[in-house]
Length: 236
Ligand SMILES: Cc1cc2nc3c(=O)[nH]c(=O)nc-3n(C[C@H](O)[C@H](O)[C@H](O)COP(=O)(O)OP(=O)(O)OC[C@H]3O[C@@H](n4cnc5c(N)ncnc54)[C@H](O)[C@@H]3O)c2cc1C
Image (cartoon, rainbow, N blue to C red):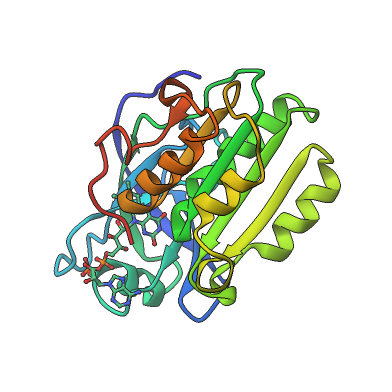
């Protein structure tokens, strides 16, 4: 996967899809109509040129590369940029510093275990979609951890994706009820020594996941995560 040089791109908000009362998808299109060419797993730093009261923030790219639009999945925390993006009208300009991050898809034949905590699901989506597009018989085990059921915001879509791709297994984990997503994922596997892992979410959650999976043989060299590499210190 080629790594693009970082660019500044001015976009406009094209549409918004509401998933839950707090979580939405923001679709943006470049003003110059350019094709976006990130590696699956990367993120962009977004700012609102019309309102500099909000600091720029990083958001993972939830959409596939090679289209003229980008999709972000954003949790409105009731303040800051996420709240402003939830309320900005369609057509509002957003500035992107793009693409960033090195926790990207590695095209390998090994089975994949992918864990997203909360909005950490967003960068995992283009990764597993690319793996399955390249080879629909690639074994992919996807876990989404959330505090409550309504935060499993793509539950139905991911279940239906499993019907399209029989080699994709998905489990939504409600952590308050089921236990931690790392423990649930680890319990489902006997030997992860030949797996590639993609872990995304709050650093503490990612570290806990890695420790649980390591007990089943997961090798850190086969584990791709911004949080684990120390690149990311914070996440909602
Ligand atoms: C690499 C990277 C990728 C990221 N990708 C995404 C992504 O894809 N989607 C996404 O939504 N976020 C993502 N984030 C987090 C995002 O960058 C912002 O930190 C987040 O949107 C909050 O910024 P803000 O300006 O809206 O809020 P701020 O004004 O910065 O306020 C944030 C503060 O709100 C408080 N807070 C946090 N959660 C809640 C809550 N649930 N309710 C009330 N208060 C809360 C906390 O005190 C937190 O420090 C990512 C972060 C990183 C580092």
